[in-house]
Length: 416
Image (tube, rainbow, N blue to C red):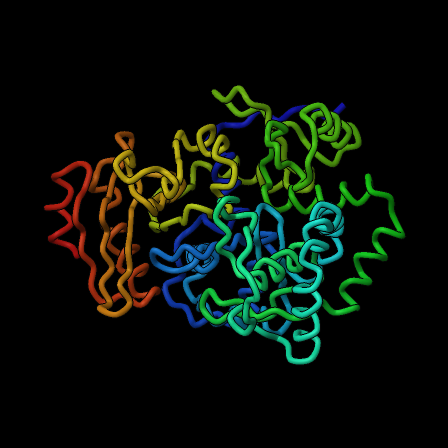
């Protein structure tokens, strides 16, 4: 039986940050990265979540720029149009390396079965959309003229307000009959999914049974999360019961693929891949040489590190909720509060807005944790990090409207 590793919380979170490409200072000098370097980063992370909310820019771009100082959003657009990545459901809607297309066949199969009745109900519209994509694609949603308004699965069912063609496109996308092959801003361009990609999925289904397919997808999930727990209902990115999750992890521990992790002062059992044990132990040996200074990075609400909020509480003693769906009067930290990572600690939140016309980045609220280190330990790194964040995303001026604690605003005036 595999023996559990007992490990200090600091070491585990540094290990997690290292595997998430979030540990260590920026290089003293760097050049624009280019698509290939960004592709390597996406492979390392496993996938990157897409979200259209753009208080500053899309989630996917904030995730990548928090890890790669040379990142440019054009790099991701190039990878998509060059068919190096595809968009589909992993943690949610994500950018995923194209070589992993076959791994997600169990997800596609489940969605095809679930969406078949809806597609049949829109059969004429679906056939019209497919015919135009075959003859003219790739095309955006605005290229299609609606015949009627219907209720999308995102609408109030009593108020039909979605174009029938838009619903058809989304159903076809979710069932993988079509896919996104380009973006201009948040506008997606669709084309019929290539027969070669579809064949990859069919081949996987023919070659291995559904249980084996789920195991392959579980491997992908574990690669993306690196420090995992069986409480997570999304474990493996497929629906499963708590008992199934426990049994699956027990089997992986028994055959040596996973190692139980007992984190000091944390009740929840965690697990890491056996192949990651060496890195974890190396980080434990190097603890005395760890430099706890910057840089400061600002993480978007759907950053890979934040996918499992309970893990953030356990390892960082940091409670985070994205308040986008919280009524404004009830928000504590703001519509787009971004956790602030300094070294290996989450020390506060920043709620930013970028006005691209004026080039002004407005921080509506900068709120530091009561447990944050003394201000002199992070203020210089914060200044550098905020200026880098602003420049990266096209801002020329920074304003800070409110801070917690209040006296922090005066200290910031002298450095911004």
